[in-house]
Each structure stands twice: as C-alpha cells, then as structure tokens.
Image 1 (cartoon, one colour):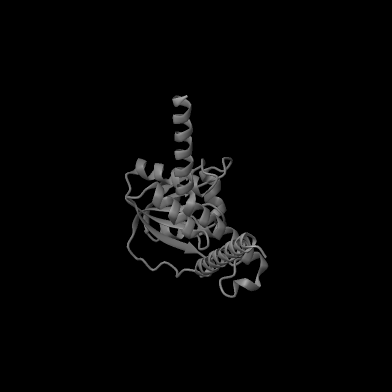
Image 2: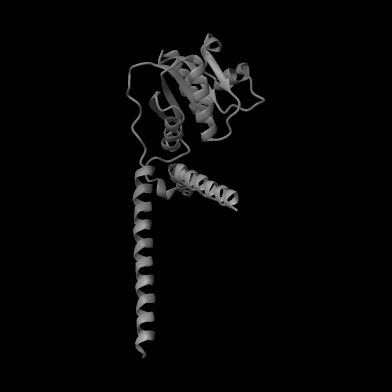
Length: 219
C-alpha cells in the first residue's frame, strides 16, 4: 500500500475512533444526567412562609396543594399561572374542590402563559406588581427542575422555595418498568437540557445576525 494511502486510512481510522469516543462520552453524560433527573426530590420541609404561592397549571393535585398551602398560611396570596382563557376564578375555585371560603380574596389567575417560559414571565410580572420578594413554587416533581430554571432567569432577585407534588400516575420508584413514566421523564429531561442551552443558542443567533448586518452595511 502506498504511503499516502496508508496515511489517509490511518487518519480516517483515527477520526472515526475519536468520534466514537466522543459520542460514547456524551451518551454516558446523558445517561448519568437522566438518572439524576429521574430521582424524585424530597418533599418540601421549609416551614417559613413566603410572600406568594405560585401554582403552574397541569393537574388538579397542583391546584389542591396550592390551596392547602394558602389555608395553612404559607403565603399571603396565591397565583395560578397558565389558566385556560375560558376559566374564571369562580370556576377554578370550584374545580379545586378544597378552596376555603375566603380564597377568592387572595387568589389571582394568569391567562397568558402556554408553556414554562410563559409561566416564568407571567409570574415575574405579577410578582413585580405585588411588590413580593419570595414565593413557593408548586408543580409536579418532574417539572420542577425546568420550572426553577426558568423562574430563576425571569426574576433572579426572588427567593423561590420548591414545593413539588407527586402525581399517583407517575411512578417514583422503579420508574423504568413503566413505559409511560419513562417516556414522560425522558421527554421532560430533553426539555430541561434544551432550556439549559437556550441562552447559548440565542447568543450565537444574535452574533450571527449582527455579523450579517455588519456585512450588509460594509457592502
């Protein structure tokens, strides 16, 4: 075999080997991260009240937990983010099934959000309007990491205490034997990773747009 051919073959082999090692390392990191993500958190044990209780819609258990916290004096007001446009306060309190009689005076609804980023923006705006500095966040345990990430970004100066809820239909132990739970967790983990890298992608897009604009001006 000619030296040039041997060198080309060796280079190709080295490239393939390096690519395989990189892919294996990334897969191992993904698996390790997923195992961490799929481990249910401990229930909240913080006793101090916060200014607000914030519920992200997505299941009756979340709303009921928010009402229980309001009744227990864990927050001065309850904000429910991502409520359907057709649902008013009276209907929501009725659906909760456990709202105290006086809940209407201390409960506000947000109708604009249709995803977790929207929840964060909607909640941040409401918190500023109320002049509040701390909140208890109520959402499903598997949704909590991404929710905390987005709310921290939207209001970095606000203290957030996580209050995860644990729906019965989502297995916490031996989740891998339940196809539905495994798919749900994998999907939510993918969204969490996407939320993590979104600022980097947005900066790259902004830099690319700026370079294109500068190139157009320079013509």
